[in-house]
Length: 339
Image 1 (tube, one colour):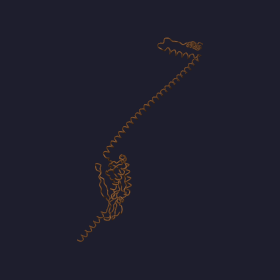
Image 2: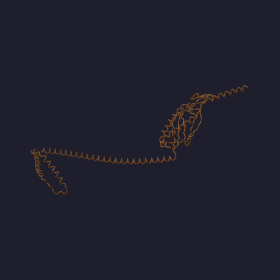
Image 3: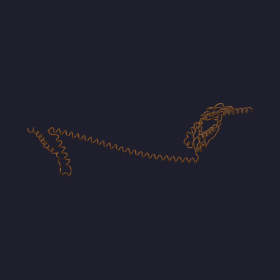
Image 4: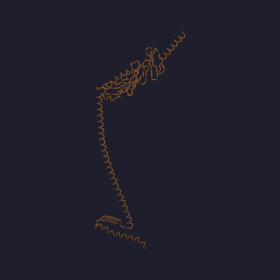
């Protein structure tokens, strides 16, 4: 009986020992750390792998973590929980709608989204009592301060500028918390209904104004292009007429030169022919020109009488000499034949 009791006690002790060992085992995943305290004092920071935390003597310090659950309508629900593993990944903190006042004393609602990353687990645990709440409150305060320095219309056109200012301000303020602010995004800026209606009317008026200006500029541009086109057409027409006249004049000049050259060649040939028969080429040429002139004068349909100028008698008197000339030439040519 005593042996069974002893064996049972031994098994119980072994079970308790194994339970304590299993309770002290921690499996730390990649991109996670645990902050280990020994008897309430910071001891070390354990990285990824299998880590042993001595029960009742050591414990992993817990930190609050925010998990976002996205609903089908696009909205998100935050789930807060305490965990003993500190994630080194980029975390998201949803900043719900808050009322802010602009520089021109107009109230509106803004919601934002912040992305941060824990780079020093020791500071994230011990410097800030509740890291997520501290980040949320300081972001809201910084956002109110920045929006208070801007007018309403400036907030709509300067989202990127607001994001940069918030990120720089938070990065400087949270430097001692072991946190790095990677990005802050303004999601929605919601002005009151009356302000929204006034802004819509203003935007509609601005669009109508721009449309009218663009239409007027288009008509003006069309008129300018039409005038330029007409001017270019007139210039091209004048250039074409000028070129045509120049070509016609050049053609007439070339034709006259060719005619003169042909006449000169004809006169030369006649002179050579008359010289062979010992005649007078000037009288022959003058007679030929005069006969051509008489032909033109008598070419009319109703011409009945032909007036022969006095000067033509001298030319006609040369016909006898021409006749004698040709007869003499013919006689000279026949003389060898008779012989």
